[in-house]
Image (cartoon, rainbow, N blue to C red; front, side):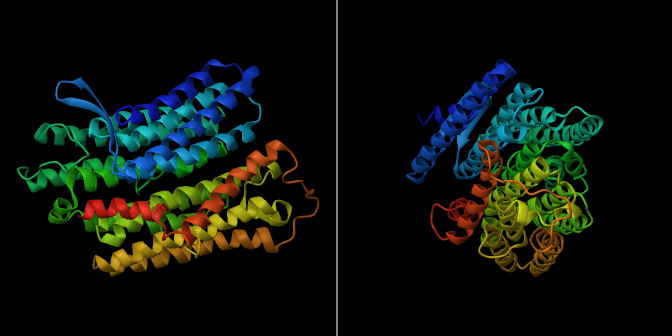
Length: 491
């Protein structure tokens, strides 16, 4: 089990993908059942792995595909943090997607690539070498493109073209960096930082820029963020997956790996690379928040919010102070839970009431109270209001910035929170305090099984967002696990 558990986690989505591709639309009930069943089994496997990992068990599967180069799947504490997030949200997003689409064209293709996307995200998390990481990183790019272009209209196809242009350019840049480094030190394993002592500092700096620049495309760091708002042409389940656990998180996760598992925090500090990266992350945080404030479309406002929020992870990783590291790692989870809540709610509003613009939110809280209650929790968490999980992330990042003698980063976090409030609170005001426009019919929000499947996943993630904040001190909370990971890096 210790050898094959990581392999099992990537094989299960393959089964779901093959079933989805093979079954025709008239057997959609079988396809839906297989998708939910496999997602649930994968969640049980991860629960078992978490219990074993707490006892100190290490899970690894290794296969030599070229002399001196291994394909490695390893479940270290950081991998388990990301895998747990992806598996939990995969189950909920599967339920949500089934309700969102109900019946429609090309759903076998959609769910097939949907599962391949989750396979790639899981593989990115468990990759034990740089080459393994790159292979899954590219699979994620290719598996996501059919989801972005699912609708097949001109807007979706343009969004898909923009997405591929950015992400493939980033992949080439990242590949150049890791191949250059491997030509100097051999195969790069994530189990310990590479021995970089004999490499000239300028060479190490250039390789670091290539790697972070390539990964920064998927992490939507400025100026490489342009694909993310365009990708909002995708259906709501795709947007939820892109922003919460798949593409942008893969980029941020890769940056954490490069800093801590390839270079090591000592080398990053010696080369003086942490502060410039923290400054770039801070600029992205403020820029994304400012652009979100200018958007009139609900999903685009959420998209620019993601541009800002994902860079909190990069900021925490680059400051390398004890609390900053923990704050960045826990935000990997907290942002995913809160942001998927917001996108699921936005999709439900569009699906049930045709609401896509912020100006159309008037009275939505009275007509769809469960949906808007969940949305409100996610929005307040993004602002950093206690007791939602986002407060924990920002608190640790702020304290960590002071520990790292980077008081300017506290000002960045405060400015971002003010901007977060400026672009989220008017939405809540419209939804709860303004009356619905004349002629808008009342709806029964949870009238049918499909309605409940569309809305309850967001309610679940909203409750989890609250629980992650209220019970943050417990050892099995996201903060508890992020603390375990951070302490391992800082020993």
